[in-house]
Length: 396
Image (cartoon, rainbow, N blue to C red):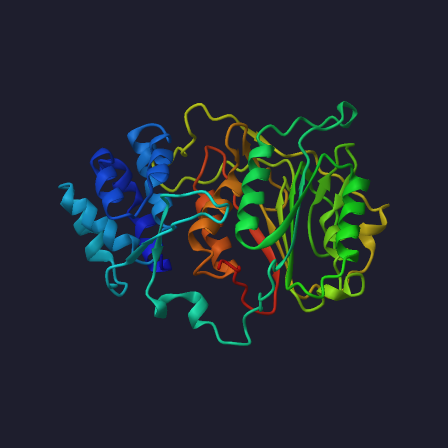
C-alpha cells in the first residue's frame, strides 16, 4: 500500500473504528481474496467490534497497493456507503487495474495450502523496477546459512524468566527461511560463551559458494554501552554478549568468504526495560490486545559494561550488514506466551505475503507499521542498515 493510502486510513481511523460494521465484511473480503480465512479469524480474535475494526485497518495496510480500492468496494457491497465515500473522495493515489490473484499451490514445506497472495502487475513490482547491478545476487541454492539461536530456558541463578512462546517463534523462523532457500540450523539454550563460539564457528565456514548469511536470535536482552550497534543478548547463564560483538564476528577480516555479501541479523530481544505507553491519537485508541493473550517482555535492567573488551574495541566498516531489532533501543519487546513475539509473528506474516515482490527494507517498514499498532503497551521495531544494494529474498 502506498504511503498516501496508509495516511488516509490513519486520518480516517477514528471514524472507521466508530462506525465500521465488521461482521458483514468477512465474506466480501474472502470473496475478493483480500484476506485469507486464517487472517480473518485472527482479526476476529482481537476482541470487541472496535478492536476488530482497529486490527482490520492495521492489517489492511500490509495487503498491497490494490487493497484500498478493493476495501472500498467491499464497503459499498455491505451498505456502508458513507465510509466508502469518505475513503474514495480523499484517495488521491492513482487508481489501479484489478489485482491479479494467483493461488499458492504448494508451500515449500511440501504441504498443500489454500493461502492466496496478491500479485501486482509486473511494472508495479519492486523487484522488476530495481536496476540490475543495484540488487544483491542470490543465485546459489541454498543461498546461504541461517543460524537460529533460541534461548528459552535460563539458569535459576541468572534471575531471568523462562521465555514461554519462544519455541513458536523458532518454528516460524525455521520454516520461513527454509522456504526462502536457506540451510537452517537451530541452536537452543546457549550460554553467552556458547553463543560466541557458535557464531565464530559459523563465520569460519567457507561461504564462497553461497551468497548470503542470516542470524536470528531469540532471547532476553538489555541495554548496553556501544559504539555502533546498541544492545546485548543474554545467554542462559545470565552473562551477555553485545550485538556489536555478534556483528563483528562476521567482519571482512574474520569472515572473508562473506566479503561483499549481505549479512542479515534479526534480533528478538528487549533493548532495555522501558515500557512505551504510546501517545493518544484518538479518543478510543485503547490498543488491540487479544482476549486471553498473555504478553511478557524480554527485558532486563540496563547494564554498563565498560570493562568488557567488546564494548570499547574499534569495529570494522559495517558494509553489507543489516541488523533488525524487535524494538527501539532502551525499550521492552513484547512476547505472547501462546502465539510468540509480536515482532516474529508479523515478520513471518509479511515475509510470506511480500517476499516475492518487495525488497527487505520495504518489508521491514511494513513490519514496523503493523507491530506499532498492536497492544495496550506499544512497540516499534527498527533496523541499522549498512547494505549497499537492494536485497530481495530468493523465493523460487
